[in-house]
Image (cartoon, helix red, strand yellow):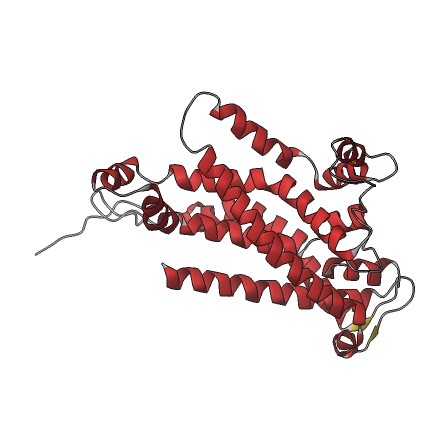
Length: 310
């Protein structure tokens, strides 16, 4: 027979289960309190603007005046916008070329400074320094250097006998494209090198030593060990590169201004022109939503391919 002793006032005697703490002292409530500032910032700076953009895309929204619901006219007229369709093709072309060249340059630099030896710290810093320059500032720098009137590049090339006359770096569509790609490579190769260098240094040294002891050459080590173990880091770099290329704006707005003859107009530049030159905020919002959906789908596809390869 068990007898439960209670104290005056109905409180349980010694040995009984303690009462649960108040809800505001529970672990769940503490977790919500810690996450609340971040959730508030994300909600105010991302969720609310995103909802506003979606709502704007369903309305005829002039810069000045009363908005009026016109769904889905802003989306259906996208197919009738020749500038946007040309910008899609140009942006995809730019994205493919930039991603391939940037991945090759970053991987080459990372392999070059992978091993610790005298002077390697200097080269790592030198390769990364362009990444500390603002993109708009880098575009202005390239514009000044490649300008045919006062830039120093053309006189140097003529003095060396490489060219006989100033090069029209932004005068033709192809030269404007590849000059911009050179700017992007100079600006981002060191940053992507740092990402890949982190992945390279995470590969155990014992794996390389075991491969060398088995008689593997440099090519076999690179293709059978380095690339497979570096795949997650490469995937991260490719996702950042593809996303940044599809959202390209600064380099074309500052460096080429979309020229010559609108040949270097990116998708984001079309959104900017519709919003602040044509004052069609509803149409610009619809283009933004389409671009966002395409980016989410592309990133999901990249992640799916990565998981399959792993």
